[in-house]
Length: 180
Image (cartoon, rainbow, N blue to C red; front, side, top):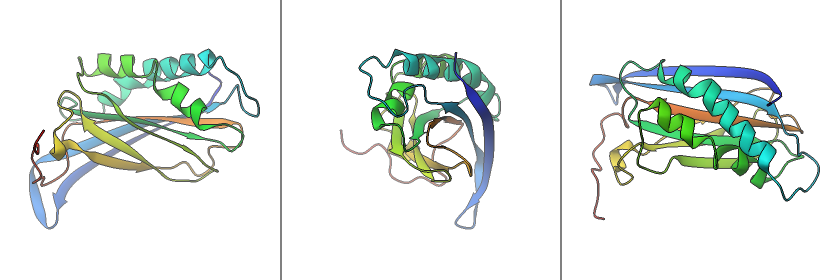
């Protein structure tokens, strides 16, 4: 079971962009869990405890975060900030093998890879969490970013596990799908 110090939820609604009122406002929502890294400070080949943390955070937060949106989710993303006594692979283990399934369940599917980012950092460091369309990996108009940080995390032996959903892509997109 994950040793969770705190959970943060975040919701933003975009109404205008570059002076233009959006026809449909865009809502983005994120959930962050600050957890103790059980592998901090040592190398372990078996990362299963971190896989389980990712699943638990996904089960705990995915449906709750989707409920913060005004319309069905069309984009999603995930990320992790690993404290200085951890390693990149610890963050990857939290967000890759098992976090995606509860996220896909919360949005009723999801054919595209869930965009992700991992960074080793000290407390208060910002991380750009990428968002992409849940079904169309090449929808450039849905490539987006939420920049997240927690003032007092990650501490040396912590990981901040993040997941996000949005009910729209970028405001006033003009890139299209591009050549494939």
